[in-house]
Image (cartoon, rainbow, N blue to C red; front, side, top):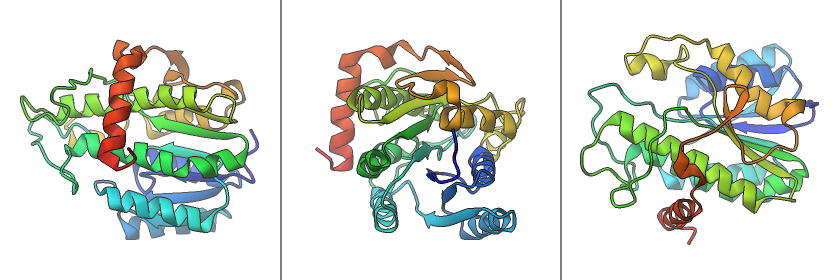
Length: 272
């Protein structure tokens, strides 16, 4: 797909695979909207993109705050009349074996808040701009690490582990993607999600104490396949393992579980 006139928002794009995807999409002539928390890193990325002849702008936000997510959506709505691609990439890893339970600014379990709720709210706020594109794509960067949601204790107040929190939040992303695909059928907007690569050489992986076994470019290749691949055009509601359609955890295909998550998410983000 020709990306030269597209406007693309990538969350978590000042580091890791998000940064590599931003750099590569900028080379196609797309207008890349960079999101992150670290202004110096963002400015360095913008300079790199512009020095190579690309176009980019920075939109700061802390995704652990729903107010910041709303402000980010408002800034995008203010500056743009359409959005062609939304890549929900930002996230927090497992934190390794000693991860402690933390709360977001809104009092929600941190990994659930950043990895899932922020993308849920941002996507729902930006749907009018995506629909205005005519042919837009939503790509949710999930993981093969998935764990069913325990709706009796979604915020994991008991038996907490960073791995459990991470895997639950990543399955929530997949469930949201399948919901979006059903909702947006016929609108021209598609929604897909993926596990980009296993243990990429990123800060998140190193902080978890894992040895990288995949490159950032391998992860970027998989994401770009859903963003711009001709073979994925028109596809929606799919979970990919790298570049291959695959099956997510069984709970993702449970309509009643997705409905419970949808109601909870609307309540927690104030969209009810």
